[in-house]
Amino acid sequence: MEVKEMTETKKGKKVVIQSIGKEKFSGLAKYPKTKTVLTVELGPDGAYKTGLTSAEERQYEELLQLPHKALAKKHNDIYKPNFWSELEIHVMNKKVTLDLEDPMDYLKYKACLESSKVCNSELERFKWPSAEFIIIDEEDVANKQSIEIDSELEAMEKFANTTVDEKRGILKLYGKTKTEDTTESIIRTTLYSEMKKDPKRFLEIINDKNMKSKIFLKELLTAGIIRQKGNYFTNGDDPIGNSTDEVVHFLNDKKNTAIVEALKSKLKSSK
Image (tube, rainbow, N blue to C red; front, top):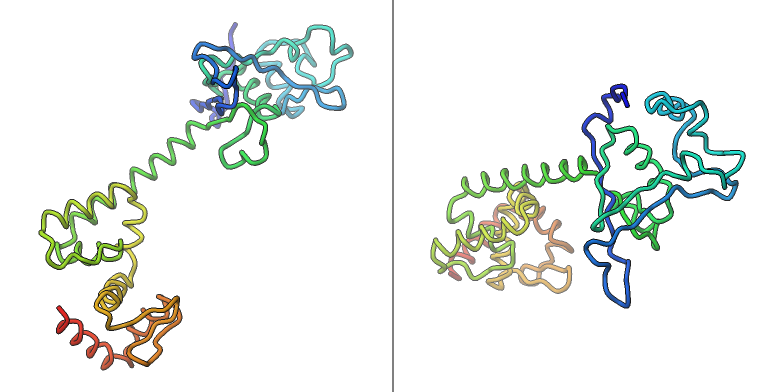
């Protein structure tokens, strides 16, 4: 059957209908070759839940060379075979890929969006607590993976352009305060491991304009020069902030330059 070319918006786009993993037989997950058949559901008004607009009904009747009103939501006799009653989505091996460029796959996709058994996305899973399947948009997944790749590449570049002393300081913000006598190779491998584990967190730390002040604060706290009780920070008996951000602001404030220099001297003497 000859099919007209699809609109550019659907060209090449694919989604996966995948099992959430709730299906059980005697407490065991379904066997790998188990096939599930999803059908188009009926609404309380007796109309098929197709998800199509009237314009789409006409468009796909033409694309699939179907009779007029073949894709209508309501039929005179729902017990008589019609397009929607015979449409089936076969989910093999716990998932099926639908190509939205293919008219039949697109209609299946729209029906799945309306199904009570299919959650429309990971973000909306709470709306379908009893759903057995979930729709995974491969393009969205690819976009997210692309963003993750970009983050990892940026993190790698930032890592390569930091000195050993800077790496040593950054590790302190990861809670690894005992780095002064640690060898260069251990510093590099330890920070590299943290960066690989969570590139986004690494970028948040290294791109923070207050990173150096936060490292300085961490060193002061480790040396016991500044003390913290809950969110309350003191320099001796003098309060200097009720949060990390407040203390960083205190350290960055030019009017406190003399105090900061004194703190640096105390820190140097403590090493």
